[in-house]
Amino acid sequence: MDETNQPLLQTGASQAALETVLDSLDALVYVADMQTHELLFLNAYGRARWGQVNNRTCWETLQQGQDGPCSFCNNHQLIDDQGQPAAVQVWEFRNTHNQRWYQCRDQAIRWPDGRLVRLEIATDISDIKRLQAQLRSAQHRAEQLAHEDALTGLANRRALFALGQSAIEQARRLGHPIALIGLDADHFKRVNDQHGHAAGDAVLKALAATLRSVTRASDVCARLGGEEFTVLSPGTDLAGATELAERLRQAIADLRVEYQGEQLLITCSFGVTASEQGAASLEQLLNIADIATYRAKHLGRNRVEVEHIIAVKQTE
Ligand SMILES: Nc1nc2c(ncn2[C@@H]2O[C@H](COP(=O)(O)OP(=O)(O)OP(=O)(O)O)[C@@H](O)[C@H]2O)c(=O)[nH]1
Image 1: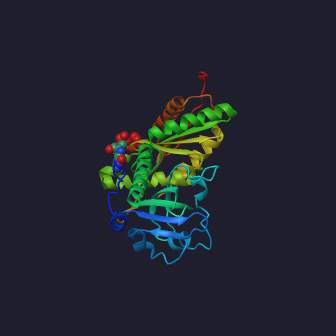
Image 2: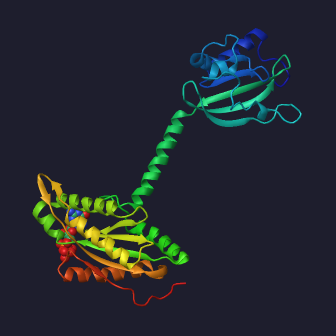
Image 3: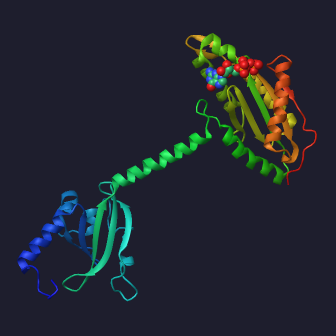
């Protein structure tokens, strides 16, 4: 109708024009009886994908594997308490026939014969969904990389501090011990010098794998940089950590890293410390373990040295 309430098109022409518009849309448009689910209209987009109407219901035509009205049908949300058309519902749905994602706009309207019908206009948003999923996984990967040492996949220094602070707080709350083992590869420069940097990288990866396999899942294995690693072990006291460090030392000394037909050997020097009831900070644990590692180097390498925490300033 125009402003004078005159039809813009004559009846026959108007119907043909409307159908032309509806059949040209790059979107599904359908109408179904809200009581019987009989499909009353399906535009060309819908017919091209789901076939002709042929006296079928919406659930027989548009969905797969249904033997009655769909469990996800939202007809009840389209009418108000008085049984009158309510607001438009917009939702996303993955079609069970073609597995594509659609944004559906559903509303109840009065059909020319007076009955309530469901009108749906649905646009294919599969490409957007795919891009969103790619973006989510890229974000997840970026977050991982920010906390991961790129060469070994172990926690990096930043992650050690993030995980370590909360592990120490928990140990403090529960009154549990927490141990820190520092380790540094011995004469690592020689590996690089004699076999090349890539061989050195292979050794670092093998060291990381050994740390992972010997420690518990609750331990945090980190590469602090270069050939320097740390294992933070919640719930472990000094005796337990010393025993763990000795097992690590032995496992690393037994390693044979295959590299271009050669077997590379490596040992590590270890410094162990522990804090009863989580009283020491991570920085204190790292510093004290460092002192012990330095002594292990000085005393001939490939050995475990232990350093007690003498006095610890309470941080709380
Ligand atoms: N391949 C490789 N080498 C690295 C990496 N980061 C550091 N390095 C090398 O590690 C070596 C460390 O050498 P130093 O600090 O002298 O220690 P070291 O030779 O292990 O001797 P000690 O610690 O005294 O037993 C240097 O040659 C660094 O270039 C890395 O990511 N990959």
